[in-house]
Length: 169
Image (cartoon, rainbow, N blue to C red):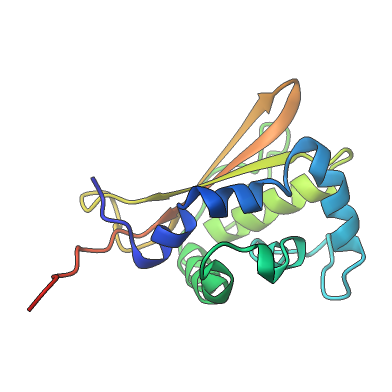
């Protein structure tokens, strides 16, 4: 079993997952879209994965230190994903193939927030095993399903493996 990376330890916490996912349910997405449309620094047409979370979830609603660590960990994930070519099409109904995995993340998120009605998102976080391909790189798993008759984006951020730290001395 993989050791939790420093950041994944925070983002795999069910409190964090619940705090984020509550904004992305079928019923909540309409309000989330309105909130983002009313925010001066957000454009739904050009929005990127990572920009909207602090707008939709106020600082005092983020569990533990996740708010303080978000910018650093999100930028590290974006940097890692931006170096990885993507071969997957955006969705079953959109044959576009974004150039990088970061571009895929951005396009998938924009598709959800810009669709009418908006498409619900279910986020998850996992950690790579030591023996996986590119264990030190982030990865992304995008799956389009139907839940309760509604289209759903299952968006899984895959955090890098980190070797266990020695305890003691």
